[in-house]
Image (cartoon, rainbow over all chains, first blue to last red; front, side, top):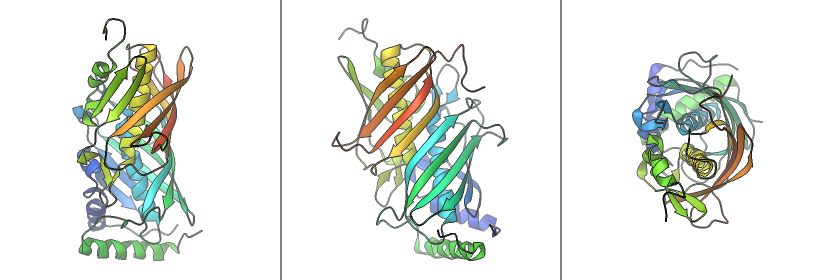
Length: 177
Length: 144
């Protein structure tokens, strides 16, 4: 896959487009740490409000679900040849080990296949080493799932995102199945 | 209702900060429990539709499963999720969401749970999940 280098500015734009307008992502203090074509790295800082087991201070699995669902959604957006609305069809999570209290979580998602209707994604949640995962996921997303605007964005951001995604699509040679 | 005979699952779940963060309570009637995720702006994933964030629905189903396990298997150490598969059936509208779970099989170490979430009409679920949970995780941690 030809990869267009996504600059910090692009990532800042993606953050704006894909995180700042998603209330739940904001509520979790989610951040886009890195992004490239078909891939996204998101983080969620440790927060005592997200604890799932008060006895251990371990973050609840649901936070990982939200992080990976969101990372997968962004990876799909970044893999699409054009901007489309998407909806999660299914998501399977496997929990390998509990998250370590006080440490931030990173979620890396990779959209490895896009067909006419469906995008296929997998992801990993970890602290610092992706090879030592806390959880992994696989998911499928429905494309053009609804009539809503793909993302709630300002006209300027929309134009920029459009241009960036188009640029990326061009360099990749398209992925339409 | 006598709190001595039947565990108070709502009180048990309110001890979980993340359940409070999502605004989840448990409605307990006799031998049945229904979890409720009270709508709040912070649960939104798509503000245009608007629709609930898929992650909140998944988390709600996981908490619904845990509540059911606590209700039936006891309010000891919290069961630990091993794997969870979530099917998204309809978009979650910006209203309260209800959840119920069935323990499909309860073994000595692992329980299999099926959970469903709906909004106005129980026959039109917005999502379903099935998952495996490790019971008594204190003496047997999940994973390797």
